[in-house]
Image (cartoon, rainbow, N blue to C red):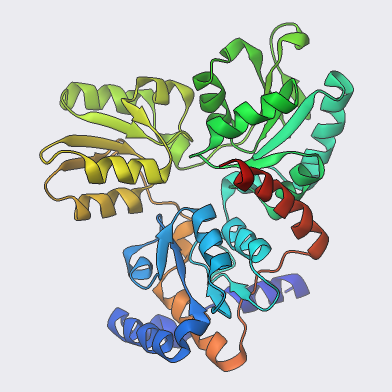
Length: 368
């Protein structure tokens, strides 16, 4: 076994004592540890987490809001981020040096964020700059690595969320003639289209081929979409929509803008996770909804809105697999390690990288 594999195994192989305990025993342990650590501990939980984990969250939210809450919570020495890697990175960027951010399972990554690495992005930027000169501003979805956020910050760009993407894309076009949107092509396409930019003015950058995909004169290109996607949201299809329309003609369909353009076009509504939660929560009793987003959240909305008829847009949809790596045994193990040694899977972003990444975040936060 290589040294790298040995280190990886050490940080991911959970001790048997946590696998052997019942859920009740683990719940008691987590509750007791939270009580002992008190205000020193803060557990943010993303909406896509399992119920067994989210029950212990001190705050629920999307990735950026949770990172902001970490920043605001100056009493917390230990932040156990129940989400995925890029979310914990953002929390580390925004919090102070005295605070430590941990991820209960280091395998909890994000396939979308991993579709744009810094090496690929630097190559793309050079080639695109050769084509379009100094006419491009980079924007990155917050669902990206700290390295990508840092790159965008260095090049005077900003981060965006699914909730403020329209405002940020509008801002970007006030700065430059074109934008490069990383790493989710679907959010970029849906946002630009909603703002009135036709599809025939959108190109796709394929990082594997290192090639711009576009049919037409290059001067027409206004939006360059990175060829990345969310593996959960891309699995909602036109066929899913057609099936709902056939089986439940009175049912409304609401989807996340990480879904494909053709799915968003056929839905009754599209918006961020917070938007979806707000719409369902405030919907009339007896209303019927098919939701196109992550299954753990859909199931929670069903449980919390029993007076409404709610189903998943895709009945065969699985929860986000990487998010689900954060489970009750890993949370308990993380808390035990913090109690014993003060550390466990700590997430740290290098200072220079964090500085430029924070610039990208701050440019967004100043505008929204």
